[in-house]
Length: 172
Image (tube, rainbow, N blue to C red; front, side):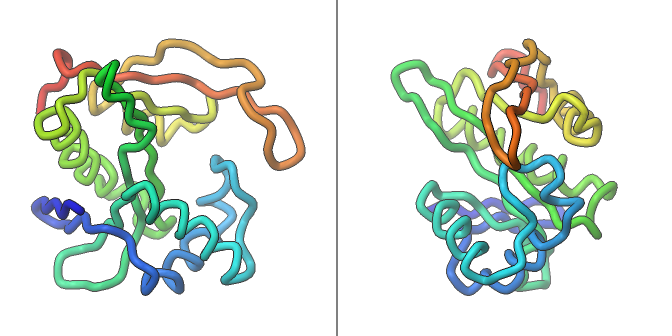
């Protein structure tokens, strides 16, 4: 398991002890608005998602000097044959707009390209998730299109925008 550090953050493997904070993050409807999961009300809901994130090696985002996560990010669905993977991330609502996710993803993407040898990293967003799209654009991702009715959650089919970053376009 890896641990990455930035000026303000430590990205470390998620763990079972993060459950209470994880539930607090995902119990906010603003956080789950653009997420495939319902707003959480019970620890069992958060435990299920946390276990999935732990299994794929997702990292908790922790401010330096703290022990509690304020979000998570990870590279998953790694296809070694094609040198590609997907990116996922979330952040507690009270930390939005502070550049935290950009800072965390710079470290994570650098690890993906330089240490994992990836050539392409994909990210999916809701087409109207302007804040997430701004973060991805700032990092150099290009929008490649909208996948119509890509998935079914929260009672309806959902379109998803596909964004991708190539190693040759990585500038950090």
